[in-house]
Image 1 (cartoon, one colour):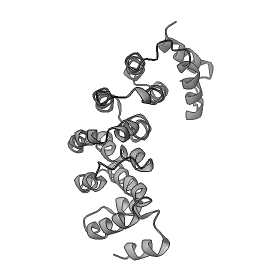
Image 2 (image 1 turned 90 degrees about the horizontal axis):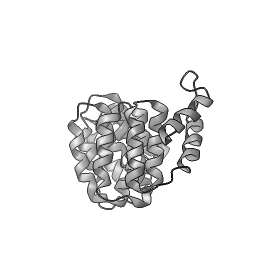
Image 3 (image 1 turned 180 degrees about the vertical axis):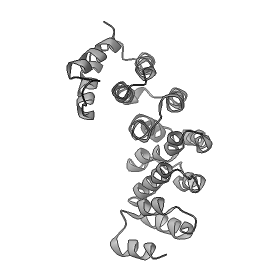
Image 4 (image 1 turned 180 degrees about the horizontal axis):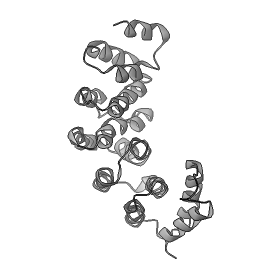
Length: 220
């Protein structure tokens, strides 16, 4: 039984896919099966992840993104091309976008800030989840204070007129996280953009600001 078959077997033991299971259960299986991978070189692990993603199955995707994050110490700039391929071929909704981008892909950008410039082309992608990724991928680096070479407001500018609500929520979320690091930067930004920023993105962006500031901005 190969590792992918082993994963499927353990998932079936808890009733998947016939029964609804929790993400935590999948992550427990992911941790358990990762230990059994003999060759943990990044090239081998990412190849296994690709096999899991090719199934286009939710639980197998969760495991693939988890395994990819577990080899983060082996990331290089070349890892970007593998991850971008996964993003454009296998990420189809907000949940897998957020799982992947706030862990493995976000960690990669935090290690190599200069790679973010290559993510800007996602802004025009037909898949809303890929466009959302252009903003969500910055959440991890911002949280870790590893975004010194990145201008988060640039991606907000590029996405500001996107008409998909989940893209709007995505860059609004990114601005909200940024507001906890650089509140005045975000205050100035939303103040200058309030006439063109969709209200859902605006509300997300200011959510963590102090109450009086939020009231002042909401009155704009």
